[in-house]
Length: 291
Image (cartoon, rainbow, N blue to C red; front, side, top):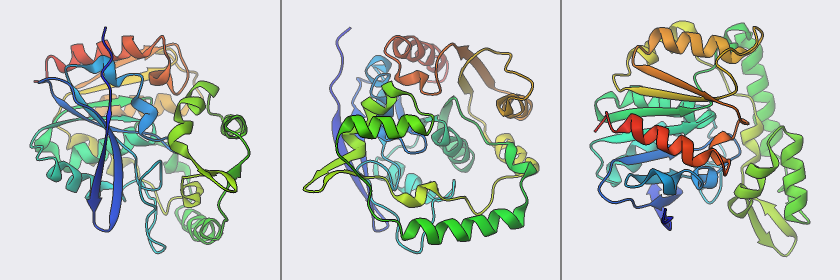
């Protein structure tokens, strides 16, 4: 297979600049790809070439990669990028689009699929759905945590690394795998006279102001008309204490068009050299019924 080279895109939206990587494709559907927390557009660099002839546009979400940080008064709640993503689709003149998201990006893709129901041809979620564990959180305490963290991380100095290896080790300490850290490094780090500066906004570590409760999640899922595919790491029988089991059970109930697949791999299974072609092929089969 001949791998397709990507090109860089940039979108100016409401005083923010969003950077993106595009794999042009050749006459297929257009896939808008949304990465996970602390990742960047390189999250889809392994799968995208194998998705041809479909066009893939992988966005650096605000505060990540080469995209702008949000203003000092703004936040990074799950829904905050939605207006800008709608504007990006308008700038691309896309009346119809496939949404693909990983982890946090999958949850944002779900929200966007509900908001733009009539424009979404298909929804693909990679190891991510709307979280159910927020139901057990105290709403007032969550707001307190949000205020505390906003102040804390707004005052944090830039973080520097002496080497890429140091960045990879730090990322692994947060539970990320080494392979994904290495792949994401070129877009996560900026070379300066002080060392390699971490590009991501420290405020991304802060608690959200709130989360979607059960009825709200149901309203969102039920508003999605597009066929949906969920690709998950692990087996189809997660342990009883695995919060993903509740997330998946809920999604299957409220998303009647949801198909699911499970693959042995890490949370970043779509960045695995051996799995990426297989996952891309599964997505292409799924999309062949959505044109």
